[in-house]
Image (cartoon, rainbow, N blue to C red; front, side):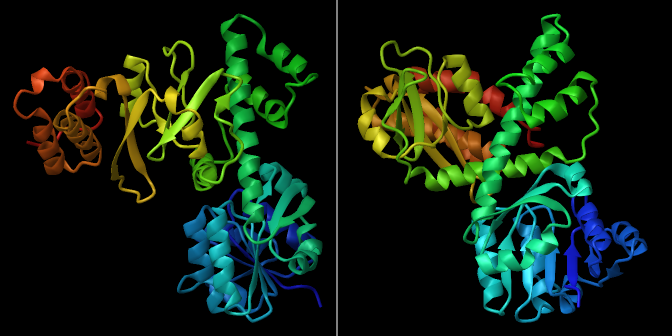
Length: 419
């Protein structure tokens, strides 16, 4: 008897993957939020389920291919999720790109119901899904991987068991670093060639013959040259993926042992304090650089003053090694609307070296006001700005700089309140 397959999520990737399962002779039951996606698969020979639970009810293996961690949690553990219909001994294979800790959490919840799960994100895009040449990186038990490999072979050419639960998603995060960096590099190279008056197609051809060659350059450069903006994967998904990468980097920052406190390529020391980092050349502290993402307002301030702020990507030991190179103090603020988001601004240490504590507190109030304003918490922002102004604030040159130069910027980040 053929292995009965359930497939949930019939978008750009899921639909061709499900079709290949049908073409390989597997009985497939499908479900998706979009009825038209389900209808096209039913026409191809699939059965339609009423919900994720219904799909799982008669399936030996259930595949999922949805957008993010929350979507996987919903279709697997939700009120009408897979867990409500799956039988003990069945297997869930999640092809979505999600956070590794999310994959582990969902797998653990399924284990309690006697259902095993593999995190098995894919790479290769919709063309590879249609051709059956996807690469699949898998986290989970070796026995489960062995069990599902014949099924995966219907749409994958490369199937690798990376490690335990979550390992597949870690591998996908690594994949996305390489993919996105190569894509951005290709875009910059083609633009540079065009601006310099050189044929970008000729540049692309010669680059493909040397060390610069990459799959992304080969696939994407022709579209860039032709100004073909018809994409098959939404940019918001790349945005989601790169934030998975950043979250992983932050999570492992404290355990990082890859830095000895010296960035050899840039000839600069780096240091961390209060979970944040600032860097500067050791000899002439003029051109400041960082690793990470400054928030927009911090970027504007720091560009104007040649200082830059970032989130930490280097372990605390670095701070001990490069303490004398720290040129700015991190000011930690309220969490953002997203509980995992933290707003950070940096102030040159020279500004605070001789400043009384009450003046430093006023500056902090100003920055708190900026962050609160960005979050549209108008009354709280106004209160913090008032604390910053206070009596005799003109005597504090840095605070005056902030109030003159940055408050107008803050007010233009969004529409002003009605009052």
